[in-house]
Image: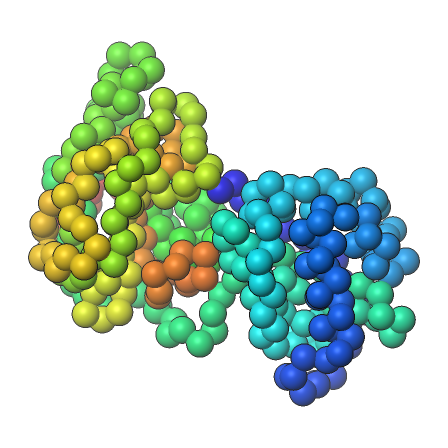
Length: 321
């Protein structure tokens, strides 16, 4: 899925503390929002705005924003009240057809919407992982290059997404810094395509998706973001996610117990991927839309020809087990 437009417009929010039970006005506002959203009556939502909101987000922008949300996320199936943030801003767990988001709604003294925000939903009841506890190996054989990895947006564009903030994208590059031979028009031109991918740690396979087609290089599939995917749950409740496998190459199934280094499948170009590569990250729960990511440290690997222990690679590193 393409990244949803993040909209945050809030006026005159009180910082007083209120009880956490949902107030009647919040309930009425959220119910009306859900009804009008699902009926494509976006102007009715605009009519619920305060004067300040209407100025900040004119009708044409409101229509465009809500239409984009509907096209990317689908119908709003359920709104579950979670708590109040900043005193009067109601947070809802918004279950759409294709994702789960956090919806903030606030109202002014005239019961008009003066705050609206959609964001990735994070379940605060889940344990937060700072880093892996389990001993990890790199999930491949031979030398690969870190295309995205690190703690800053310059090194790693994933850092802005909660579940993927510790993610890596790995490629195989030649001595000239190219990831393919020939003209790069076919997946087979790419050095990473079809290479064996390994279990970084032992654990249980909790998800195995194998039927997503590989993209033609340069195109992407935003509707199946991770494409063909394996998620392994370790004994330490870490969820290791490996994405973009080659179609029909995955050798494990849900419920399997895997050992560290076991072959899971082959590297491919499925999902939201423009060329064959491996996406890998750790998260604190299985559902990526609700998860928080953790940083990955590998026990002992070669980095640019030198052995490093308990190391988390960064963009540009050439690494191998």
